[in-house]
Image: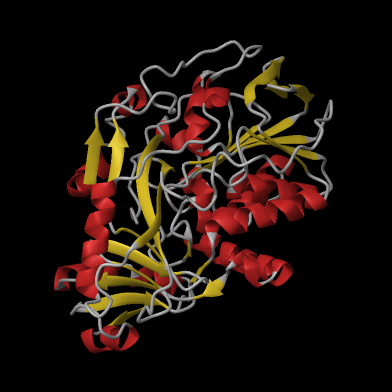
Length: 447
């Protein structure tokens, strides 16, 4: 990685003392875990959040920075709408430094077939009262002047963006000020199980008694669960991203086609990424879950670059143990921050495509490049559920590249699952049992 703005080697910020007991322990300091901790504390519970590395230093700080309703799986749209409202509240509270802005999201169509595929999604937009609409060729050029000759676009003007590596740490500081104990550099090695249910957690700094645990471990969730006998068909997908310096960009929003994705940042530069290209390492879990992922892989085989093995220490590396002694350092301490090397070839292709689309700008020089590992599920929608096999454990994972945008709403849902409050949304599509009860898995939109 080169000059990633949130350097994983930076010193820890949160070193709250661990109590002997708490009402809830949250595992994972990404946007979902931080949001869950905030919501639980708001319900009057004592909460400890343990993060093995730095808050927001993995995928929650490495994504495109989009906060969108457009293109969501129909079951996710209510979550996305709630999350957008919650992001706006955080912006009101924390100010412009969060980078939250209404910028609009645009899916650009190179061919009539692409445009038709985008238009098919509008039935879901209308069902939820979204302002999404199809743009003609002329309207697309009016929105994005001096651009390539796209034949049309799907556009949602009300969609938003924020600065990932800034936003999550900012929110975490407020959560800590509200009384949540946040401990960075503190891996949870295992659950403490008594009489068949959660009785606490075993961290590298000692045990914490609690009756409830939220696992929001991102790409590490499947490894953690497997050590407790729970199978979760989750894989990690490599996503590469770059940042330019300040550009005289022809529009102020976020857009994507099959070759590149772009979002104008608050600092005047753009975040640039391959539009569809991603990588997947072949490890034990990838082979174990190949059948479950077959449908989505068939749909995206042209854009998926398979790699023979994950680097040492990654969740699905061949040498990563699937069992370990909870009283000794384990895999979560051996790799504090999942920091994959970006795909230089894919980023170069994206910058070339950007230059072709905007000939007045040409290929932009890149100020920084980085990559993250997206925790994805076979049907490209998350798991938000209590784990029946381990009473007291609530799971929020597999956000499949959508986590930054919907994270605040995911945190609210997880908190309600912990406390038993009535669900504000239909969570049936997000249940854990869908992978074991014979249900047919229908993949949602991959972008």
